[in-house]
Length: 243
Image (tube, rainbow, N blue to C red; front, side, top):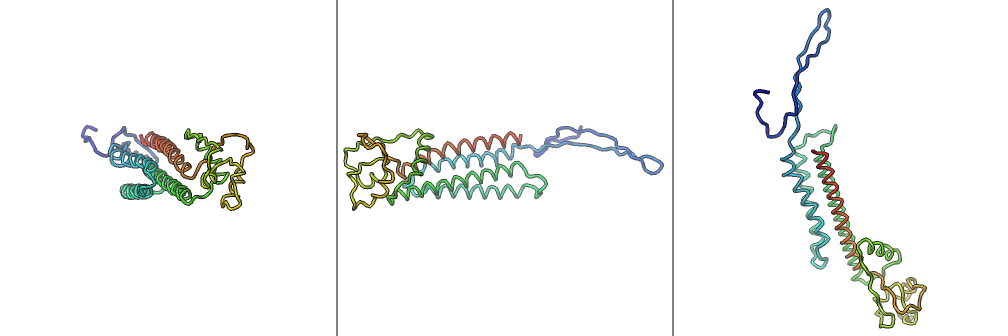
């Protein structure tokens, strides 16, 4: 190692020699073996691959902050997914093509692509809920239970509405408790309102159920926290494994 020169890609962990002997006919043969253990430096990949992919995943959280009315919510999520795919292709060209062992860097790139794909799917679901709200569709009982669960996770409170005030058809369609006298035979929402009628009709106030728009907003909040935790834990685990 007296003539060793510093290498920009590998570090020499240790080096040693040993002698291997084995018999050959009536004599023995000895081999002198030089052993050098190398470790690839990770600074290059940390700066050029890991950190850019990590910041792209953080940008994926911003997708859930983009207003739906802007029309760029889905475009933003799809652009991030395509960027990660291109990055994964560039990294794959520098990795040896072998199936005996999968590099940790490839696993990290694949995990980032999967997370970005799930964010895209969640964005499509949120946009679909927004579309349901614009069409005035009724929120089913199961969806109300799901919205109640999301409200607990995101600390969202329901608004109390006085039953004596005039209730519009759309508002009555989204309420879990309605007054029977306000429903007429000509009301197109009669069937849905009767199905969601609560047993306690003497309560002067009732809690209005969540609309599809409110469910979409709660899903945006929940997705930010969920994907932030998943991204941080996944990145930390990969850094520990690579180090």
